[in-house]
Amino acid sequence: MYILINIFYTLAAFKWGDWRNWKLYYPTILFFVLGDFLYNFLLYKKSMWVFHDLILPNHTTITILAMVVSYSATVLIYLGRFPEGWKKRSLWYLLWVGIYLCAEYFNSRFGFISYHNGWNFWWSAIFTGIIFFILPVHHKRPLFAWLLSIIIIVLLLSIFDVKISEMK
Image (cartoon, rainbow, N blue to C red; front, side, top):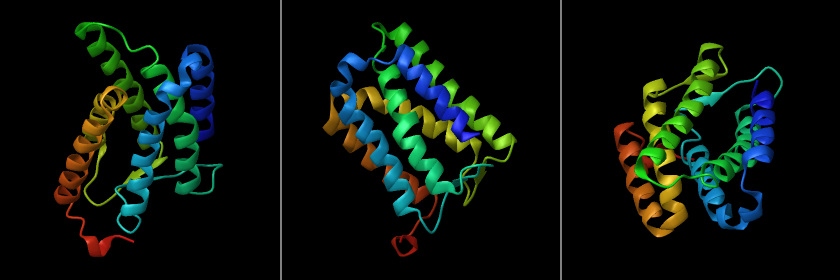
């Protein structure tokens, strides 16, 4: 399943991604990837979600594939075609949140993702909304995005009662 999703993102990126200006988006791609690395590292012993697949062997392989392919494609398209005006931006934001949530919904229904430690689809919906809000913020004001991210991480660690002793 995840191989198909990443093929879709690759094709979409080649068709709609802003490849001419990829260097402008590179820091935000790294920001997106680093956020996922932090989740996987900090919550190694207390995962909120775990990916499963019929072909790929484990969560780590699936996650690395997503980081390299899906996140890069997402940023190249999402920011590369980010519209002017609040109405168009809001619709673009909702479209991308919808794309990610539809994929997650189907992955959840077919057993390709499992939730743990109090996390569920609705937390993913909130988190996905945050991600697509913070990506353009990072693109324009990276330090402010990092500050927001640290606040959100601390808040989530508190909500889900993740103790430092539970981290790897």
